[in-house]
Amino acid sequence: MIPNKNVYLDYAATTPVDPRVIAKMLPYFSEVFGNPSSVHFYGQQAEAALEHARKIIADAIQARQDEIIFTGCGTESDNLAVRGVALARRKEQGTSQILISPVEHYAVSHTANQLADEFGFKVDYLPVDKYGRVDPADVEAYLQPNTALVSVVYANNEIGSINPISEIGKVCRKHNVPFHTDAVQGAAYLLMNVTRDQVDLLSICGHKLYGPKGVGALYVRHGQTIHPVQTGGKQEIGIRAGTHNVPNIVGMAEALLLAQVELSERTRKLTEIRDYLIKNVLEKIPECHLTGHPSIRLPNHASFVFGGVDGNHLLMMLDMAGFSCSSGSACKSGSPKPSDILLAIGIPLNWALGSLRVTLGLDTTMEQIDSFLQVLPKLVEKAKK
Ligand SMILES: *Cc1c(COP(=O)(O)O)cnc(C)c1O
Image 1 (tube, rainbow, N blue to C red):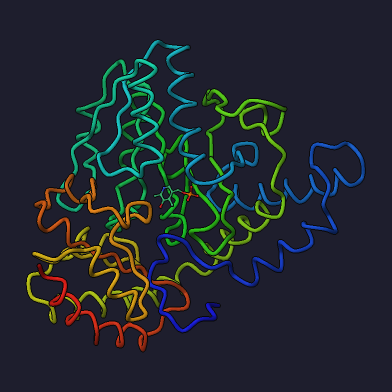
Image 2 (cartoon, protein in one colour):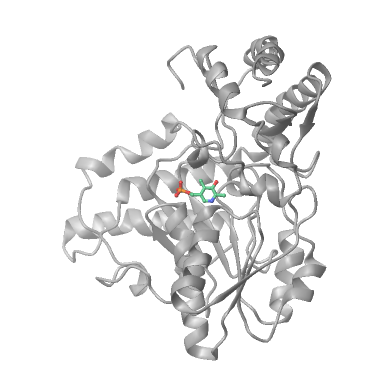
């Protein structure tokens, strides 16, 4: 899929689009180009494609078709969930506490912060263990009569740990508090089931699972009230206005379908390579720790911290050697600030500055990892200050 000679090891930042997905999308750029909101033939054709995509996504996560809202990206899904539910709950019940984990993606945490700074909400943070996981008993302890919404990431983008989502969902349902989970990373490798997990809102996007960039979806459980955050026309039952990006929506649906159908095969292949990578990095490199849970983690995800290493320098040297990795979430690369997520799980500052995230994908081979393992120890040594 990737035509150049550099080795891409940053699949948590984004993935290439699967050729099977591109083939599904192509007719919707020029043949079936209508606006799904138009009443005529062209509009009906586009609307049929839109609703078919909605059904595929609903089926994949065990939801109803009318519970899927299309958005412009994963970030927008998170914004809509957090802001839309916080505003609706305050209007209906006067609640104003937002309960999130300290290891959320900025799409959730910065939205919650804005609600606190500008709209009078209060954000409280759930504790996490050293792997960045939330204990459902803590959710129970932190819930208040005043809680508007709980949001906990399904699988962490930076350290790969998977949260006990169905146990957290059970606690929230018992107390009748809406529960949102950011499954943007999780949906690529975990079986989503909003009924089993008792989730009220769930975010996904296309480009983390071999679909296109610039498209997302939010599951909103039937009966859950939510305020629109993008106002305009009547699209998406008035919750998300704007003409639909039909090719991208069709592509995201196909990508999610393939991810779920091929889940066990992809997981088996990637877990083997990931475990080989982790074992060798820990063996070959002194002063090195795995971050995130050793086994309850995404099958394609390996993340480390190295003592006394400048992580950005290491990334640049890896890039020059032909390996594209990340030091944490993609948006932070290039800035010398340590990751908030690593600090939240108790990693000391001088270690947190030496972080490396290696995320594998469908094109990753053992040979690539072997050549990576050839150069990494030398470059880590060089990057020691
Ligand atoms: C990538 C990512 C997002 C943002 O999705 P975009 O489609 O890039 O806006 C949100 N949450 C997590 C966990 C992510 O990994």
